[in-house]
Length: 312
Image (cartoon, rainbow, N blue to C red; front, side):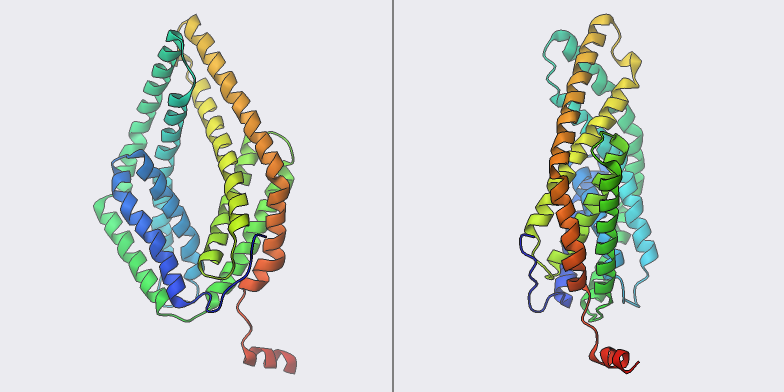
């Protein structure tokens, strides 16, 4: 699996604190610019919030001094506020990249961009509320406290939580891959993408905690996630553009629109083929996660617990 060896001292308190702090620093850097609607900052803040949402429930296990529910809710709300803005940013970027060269096609691009810009305004307003200075300060403070408590604790319950999460994420990804099969179905393929991303985030925790080296499986999941992510973005864009009959008035623009949409559909089919070629590699990652990583991640049984088990 491209290396699954752990190292001595894996999962130490310093490893875990660093794991949280790295994600917190990304959020701290990008949340402010994201509030202003900066495209790359919106993307990076959303990624950081998603990674923190994966880390907090796992590393929060066994920490009696931390109440996880408000922290998880705040991270969830941030991700949800960033999502619609990010989706429209991607759509605008894809429209800008379309090979539209004729004057009619250029007018079409302008009409579509104007429409998408108009749709972006309300989500940006909602994002400014969700990422207010006060809310950001509160979230950063709570995450800093979380990291401090985690670094001071030797409790290993988090490893049980991580093992269960790995098993759950791997099982969910397998179920979606099998259920979707080889058919081109945007909705089910999006579910595969989400499941692949969630397993990847859980594997990142495993690797960063020093429990295994996972270069190849992480790369396999990232490549599949990227292909399926772009496929989803194309589907979202096609849905948005086809739902705007007035954005391209006139027969000439309608012809240009039909040609652009056909090009997007061809790209979608190519990405689907790329995903199909990755299915077996994804299934191997799942198999090794369940057979090798889950048992390795679980903490060794306490000697006293083993004696008690044998006594029974």
